[in-house]
Image 1 (spheres, rainbow, N blue to C red):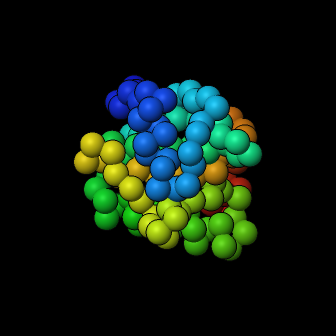
Image 2: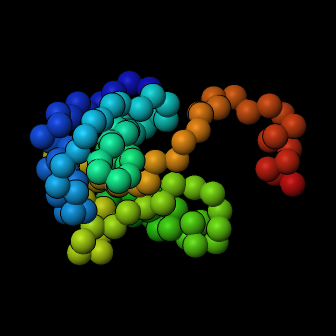
Length: 122
């Protein structure tokens, strides 16, 4: 995926301020995905993903965030949305919706084997 939004350490710290994160240790761009810019961010005590929604409206991004919360509450293995200290689901960066999620270690599988697609659809 092309990286649409380039962030500096200072930018990421600014984005994470509403979440109570005061300092980051490191960050890197994550590959994969199709329409968001994602950064893996290491803070003191946890690893986060900052997602800049490049093509989604605020409404679309909110719906996705609520879906992820619903899936997590239903014990579906997915990244967990982290709300701001004011309990907001999203923030924004340069007019684009931003989500912060817990980092889930794993790999992106671009092409699923047919047997897995069948299992998911069953």
